[in-house]
Length: 264
Ligand code: PLP
Image (cartoon, rainbow, N blue to C red; front, side, top):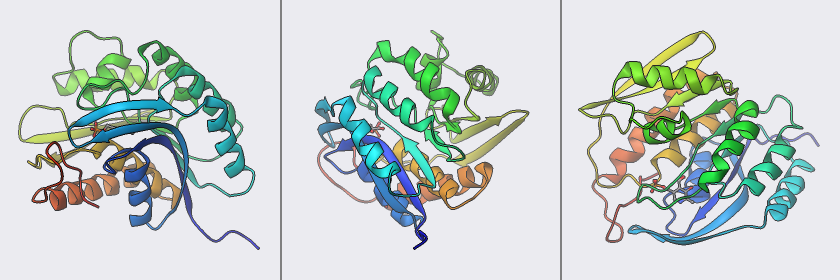
């Protein structure tokens, strides 16, 4: 029988506190009416106060998970999150470069907001070489874009952000979304740059202590939109609206002693 599910796959790490990682991705896929698949790259022991530890899934077993899924199920879009090591990147790039026409959203997760590295620093060139060219979209935040561009000064102005996005686009992804959550002031603007087109998505800043999982939620919401056949710009717009709803919904809730999650 022909498959009649819309599916989205997350290749990412587990967050035991449920706010980020594959847990956030699967909740988001479900909210967008997608059947969620997952291939785990790492386990983290974490709570709302931060990441207490992490262990990688053996890279060959990341490959086994991908082979099992690709062998059996039609996958309509893929999101990549925490990767931890260059061996894992290589295994994933090898599997995904065989696919044709499946949108890939790469959330360039480098560290947690508390500062725990989620990808070894020496793996950054491999991330750029192997995964940027096969990605439909990469979604760095401002600190990540700064590092990926090899800059020492943080991106301050909209012109800085635009230049960084153009620089990252030259490394081969189909599009770059630099997220404006770390901008100063009342407004945060995300910038989407594709070949020949720039689009700013301005939004009022939502003041909330509960921001854990924002990046994961946005990238998986975009992935779900692409899985459902939306154009990139529409998928980014809808994902932003979904994230703002989740931030507002979580703003009056309380979980744990630290930074609580966005609420799906
Ligand atoms: N844990 C996992 C498994 C993640 O994938 C991420 C982000 O991608 C985080 C933690 C960090 O989330 P945050 O920066 O929202 O604390």
